[in-house]
Image (cartoon, rainbow, N blue to C red; front, side, top):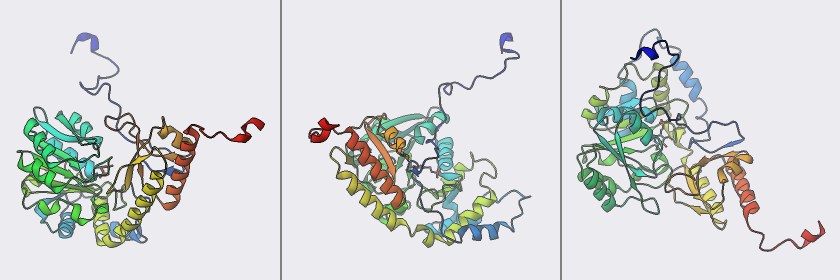
Length: 375
Ligand SMILES: Cc1ncc(COP(=O)(O)O)c(C=O)c1O
């Protein structure tokens, strides 16, 4: 330490973080919030009461079960895996962080696709992992050939892709996951945050026995309607579960979360029954948006739609109408795009009305109103 910095009022943040703004979608109090891909419907009736009854008996003076055995057993039963193949944490973001901490780090490379979930670059940066981003094709698909070429070229230690993709909504084909795995020595992490919307066939969990370095990551934040809970989990070979324990904080998963997750699994059918309604709304919204000239809607297997228009500042214009969506328009590959979460029918209608108004106000008046002269 130089003598001149003795007594300074603040400490410089470490290298690489000085220009960084904290990551997170805007949290604004507006009438229609369609920007973070939560489920609009609250948990089923009776859920909170059941959780309240169960937490009343908890001895909170003691640390929680560090290895959350009961929750892992329930998750294992649900996914036809063994407890040793399941690990949970505070949201799938913490699972992803633990994976990057355990398998990334200085001198190691993670490979992901573009567009992709915005947290992957953040996690790579904070864990000092080199990141390689491989472009999806024009329809935001990853072909097996491109997947194989990417891992052959970059020889990553870790591959992280979301399926369905956030923000595109597209699924990654099983053949592409196989190509990523079989063509590399990497840990292949498939982030299935939205998989419950896509149907059981879409999940790659069925490949776990065949692909030893495959990790499936899931969350309670989306189809499970518990974003406020912060609970996610992974399915993988036991050695992965052992390795993430080398980096986890002791007692990282608090007792209340463990109980709330267990009760949710007991009520799984009630939690997930809204999915058909979400899919129907997604298709209705997509059809309505496609009726507008100049609006491109990408096919989505999730509870959101990626939408491209030529309208400058669409995000802000919708916000002016009280509708908050996610702005991707300045991101690479996503020129003119916003991502719209499927909300309640009323919220979706409000969003559709706002978009119609914005588009109408932007359209060139090629057929001027003849009464214009009279005004
Ligand atoms: C693809 C993907 N993965 C992971 C997450 C993180 O979810 P959580 O930390 O709430 O489980 C999100 C959240 O939007 C996501 O879109």
